[in-house]
Length: 330
Ligand SMILES: Cc1cc2nc3c(=O)[nH]c(=O)nc-3n(C[C@H](O)[C@H](O)[C@H](O)COP(=O)(O)OP(=O)(O)OC[C@H]3O[C@@H](n4cnc5c(N)ncnc54)[C@H](O)[C@@H]3O)c2cc1C
Image (tube, rainbow, N blue to C red):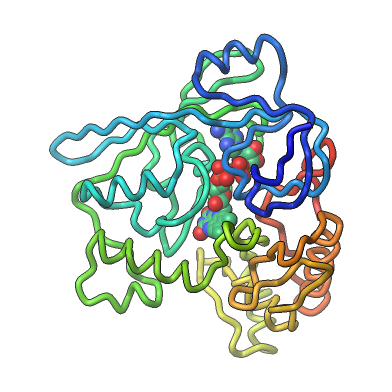
């Protein structure tokens, strides 16, 4: 049985029944005649295999990128198996602005729309015009435009109606030549002369200082989503915790950093049977010392329960936790 430990960045020891590589769109059509995938996998940076997986995995290895432009915009059509950060680097080299805030996010281009990757004030959906996908039900290629993708904070239609039905094959982007740099966040706001290159380099520096590199210690980035709560709930919390950080996301809702809630409860740096709550970023759990899927789930449940008990907030996990046959919920 193929090992999965190198196919997900958390690196837990697990195996799979079948892993089929998808290198070309014609492979997709051919494979679809023989089997139905239970899971589509990119680089496994948002997926954690907590035990041996008995389903069929299709690993996305589609490649190819084309660039074009007109007077106002750059257009990119990228095959979904391309590495996201490599695409960002190419854009920076070509002086194409827009993606620089999203530097160093691991994973494939095709997974980027799934949870609408975002960092430092920018979400990828801002630049997506259309997505091509292979519909596994009727075995045909389809196009969905951005207005129909139901993009939100770490959300899209691909996590709901189109989950495990759509194999994303290509993502089309439009990057306007005239646009304003997004430098609202901390160290970016301090840049005297923001440019594509300086934002890109600063984002890389911040991330390298703050986040563990999955090549050194297994992790899947943020384990939990930042909760978005109604203002009345936030006000109640603020009365008790004056220093609670928050961002207004609408007239009615406020986003609270989950890391603050977790840190406040003393989990930062704690180790539970080989799984660590990262000492620099409490939102990240790591495979510190040959942890197991069971230990990870236990620890995550402990954190979730403690946050709920103290703050009345139900954390949701951002990562895809895979059990033996399907995704699991905490
Ligand atoms: C160190 C680190 C830092 C991170 N930082 C950020 C960050 O700043 N912001 C952020 O948003 N995320 C972040 N992430 C999460 C992760 O990088 C993203 O979610 C990324 O888009 C996942 O890509 P992947 O190819 O590894 O997806 P996978 O983990 O392989 O798949 C993720 C989900 O998408 C589905 N999927 C994958 N490819 C396809 C496809 N072609 N068609 C249909 N479904 C598909 C899978 O079935 C799965 O449900 C971070 C992760 C790590 C390890």
